[in-house]
Image 1: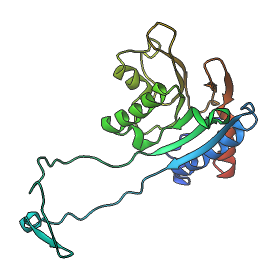
Image 2: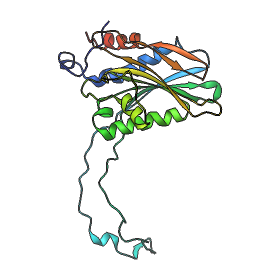
Image 3: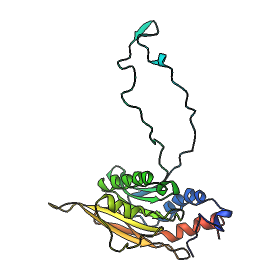
Image 4: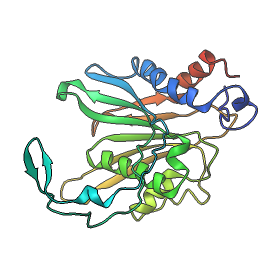
Length: 239
């Protein structure tokens, strides 16, 4: 069965992309039931911050007056005004993911499957934020699989992550906009840390690949993305 383009006509004329992203983590968990060995558990996690606006009001200088009274006492501000005020983006990040835990090690997180959303790759700062999360997981010895079916933006998060780390993948002369990649960090004795990558380009109209998922330095499972994706499309009646 083919990979659909969920971000352009005709598919997105009837179906929103976030319906697929919202359903897919649960179906991945269902598929992993038959793949994970005893002692490992997978759970879905979805966090999609709702957009909102805050009305900005003018702050009166009186708010910084010293010696304001409170409950009969005196409250003194140590600093009348902030030493720095800047505009910044503190919005939360979209998260569509499946987390795999080792229950024999007090539910240690060992693997994560991250589904890229449009908001994860629409701007340089959001791409950097996503890649910083991936890098943090890798530093914690968590295997990370990134699945990107977003066709709205040409950016390749995997290529940009490597660039942040000072490397490049020679096979990506022209980075694909849709792909899946499994990343694993390794720390050989008395050597510098290593990063292993298994990269799969995704093509519209073609089946999704089977990717490796490392549960420990010596244990991995082969996980096919196709069954869970097709079940999502079947349930949502996406043809």
